[in-house]
Length: 218
Image 1 (cartoon, rainbow, N blue to C red):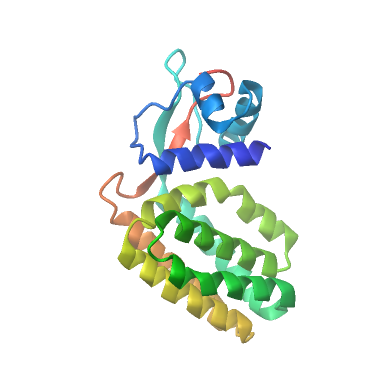
Image 2 (cartoon, one colour):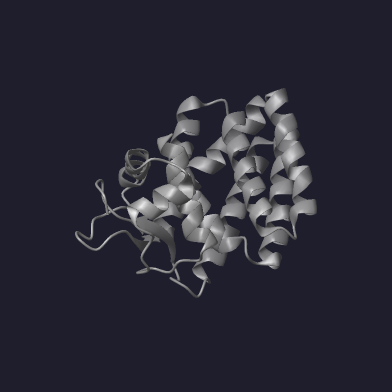
């Protein structure tokens, strides 16, 4: 439940295109909007605390802040190419079928920003599953909130979505063929393109929006 609420808060930030310094709804309003109790909301927000992106503005409320994207990308570049290499090496038939089905949906989803971003997220999760490494999958899972926030910044451009379609199609092909080095290269190329697109974002430049608050009621 904690993780689900944290993800919903992240979606709220990206869907409203909240800029750093903007205030989120009150705890009462946010809990009502998400359909959860206030204690459950606080538990979910602890996921964001654990990620190191939440701090208190005592007596003021919960505000949008920034996260250095370069730091996030450094972690992704360490973990996701390894996941792609292992996925190509192990090639679990069921996960591979799911991966290819999700990639196959991407072209039809190009006009739908939100659906495309969700499919993009699902593909990265499937690559992590296909790696067969539970520790690696868990580590990437802990970054899910931040990755969704990042995709909220990059999925708005039709050109970037088309580039992502091409890059993820190549990645899936390399995994299907068991090309370990090729899968790793394809993932690195995709992450490099993502990094460039985020760094070119006019709002926040090398940062993505995250939520700041505290463990108690805002």
